[in-house]
Length: 299
Image 1 (cartoon, rainbow, N blue to C red):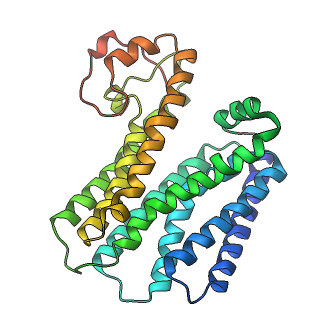
Image 2: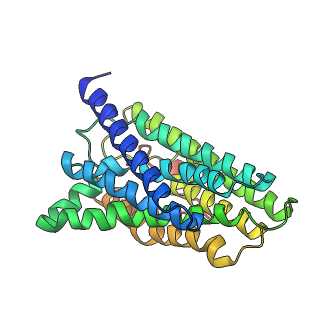
């Protein structure tokens, strides 16, 4: 392990350990309030701590693992604060959240080179916003994703109520969530393996799941959140709590994240426009002949 990666892991660990301690402190101070309020305040406090580390190190990518670290911790916090007997629905939903979070966090750190790396989107934003960058970074890169993941995790909180018996909706929830995790895992592995093979510059990945849609990893991520929302639907929760978070995350991906990637690919991949005419962006409803596509890697 090189020095930059080693130092980065230590720094990440310090940042997230500090954030966890502050979050626990906020949760204790707010004792007596509703569990969702205590967890929400603790989530925001932890985000502020991670943001402080981002500013100190001048690297907003320090926040990147938060997306997958926070929901399992919030789920654990909910179980601890509620104190009631855990239902099968809660246990199943939490197991899937934990599996998703552990897998995504491992995937991030597996390919993370260290503190010298910062996401290209943040670098572009830094150039565009100039002196206002850190305000934009806090609101758009740190706080906004925290709100979104908390909104998605609210569905897990809502799944704690309702009948203890499982229903067909629970089966659909488990299947959708598991499918999402499998899609994201498989797509990430296929992309990583292809990149390690050293594709030609400007090439496009068109094998495996990537032959059926241009962003199968994002499709898996969205299915995961909708699956968690369906657990809340099965518990009889109002739709705004059950599916509101998944809907907001979907809007983020469809109108912000995916368009940014698409614009980058159109510049970096000469055949991207032709590729986009044959392969759907997210939902694999049509696929052109594989023999006409250029081999390569996305990203």
